[in-house]
Amino acid sequence: MNISNYEFRNEKGTIRAEALITWEECDRPPLFLFVQTIDSYRDALWPDPNSFLIATILTAWNAGERRIRLNDSVCPVLLNNLEGVFMMLKSWYPDGFGPRPEIEAAVGAKASLPVGNGAIALMSGGIDSLCLLRANKLYYPKSHPNSIKAVLSITHQEHLAPDQEALWKTFEGRMTSISPVAADAKVDVIPVYTNMWWLNPDGYFFGQKSYSSQLSAVSSFFARSFHKGYIASSYDAAFSNKPWGSHPQLDAYYTSGHFQMENSGTEMTRLKKVALVADWPVGFQSMRVCQNDNTGSENCGTCEKCIRTMLMLEALGKLRDCQSFPRNTIDTELLTYLETYDMLHSTDIMHDAEKIYLYEMTIPYLAERGRYDLVETLKRILLPLQVSS
Image (cartoon, rainbow, N blue to C red; front, side):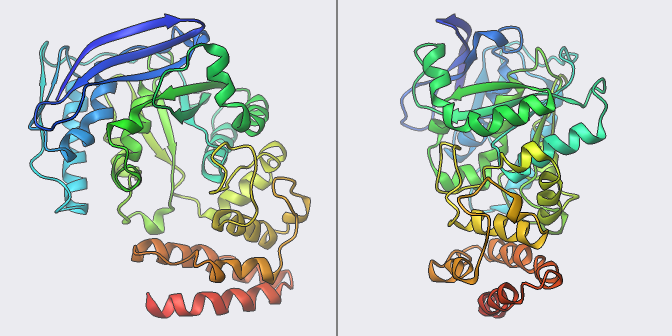
C-alpha cells in the first residue's frame, strides 16, 4: 500500500485532509481517503501522515499488503506503539491476520512536539460518550490540559459533502441531542465526514478489529488544536479481556509523539455510567442509545439497548422523569421482547456473558424498589442463558 498526495483543501465552507491510497498486493481501485469538516476548524485539521497510517494500518494488514509506504516522515513513537497493535490483535485473532506489513517512510522517522492544548472526545449521544464528557467536566478543571474542549460527531459517507450546508444537513438528527449537551458542558461540536469505512466496508472487521484505529485516526487529524483524544470505553474492567475493536490497552497504542489516545471509563460499570448521566439534567434528557435509529434523533424504546437503558433507569428510580424515550415506564411485556426477539443470544460467548452481567446488576436495585414483576421476569429470561454459558 502507498499513501501519498497529502492535501489540505478548503472549498465552499468546508475543509478536508486527504491522501491517495493505492494498493500493491490486492486488486482494489485507488481511494482518496478524506476527513472533512466545516471551515471554522481550519486551524485544527491537517493532513498528518501519521493519522493516515493509523487509519489504514489494519486494512492493509488484513488485505495481505506486504508494506505500507508513506511519501513523508512518520513518528517513531507511533511506529513503536504499533508493534503493540500487531501483537495484541494477533493474539486475539491468530488466524485472522497474516504476516504484518512493513512500514516505510520516504523521509524517515521524526517525532514532533504536541502543538494543541486540551482534549477532544467522540460523541454519539449514547451512555458511554455522555458519561465520558460528564466525568471529565466533573473531575478536571477547565484549565487542565486533559479537559475536553470539543467533541467530534462522525458520519461515514462515501462521497464528500458538496458544501457546508449539505454537511450540516446530515447531522440534523443527532444535533438535537448533542448540541444541548455540548452547550451545557461548554465544548465545541465538530461535525466530521469521512470515507474510512470504505477502506474495508465490513461490519465485523470494523467492530472487532478496526473500530478504535479509525476513531483514533479521525481524532488525531485535529492535532493542531488538541493534544489528546478520548474514546469512551465499551466495557468495564470486569470484561477488559474481551477481544474488541476498542480496548483500553489497544486504543493507547494509537498514540504518537504529538497526539495521545486514551480509552476512558472502564472503572465504571454501565449502571454507574447511567447513574452519572441521569444526575446530569441535560444529558439525562438528551441520551440517544438506540440501535434502530442511525440518525441519532430519537430512541425507539424497543431495541435491546433501549430496553436495557430503560431498565437501568427504572432500577435507579429515574425512568419516570426521563423524556428521552417514547415512554417513561417499563413493564414485563416490554422486558419479554428480549426473549421473543432473541436479543441476548449470539455466536460470541463473551458478548452473551457480558449481557447477562449487565442485566443481573439491575436485579437487587429493582427488588429494592419493589419491582418484583421485573425481577422475576428477568430471572426467567436469563436462566437458560446462564446455564448455556
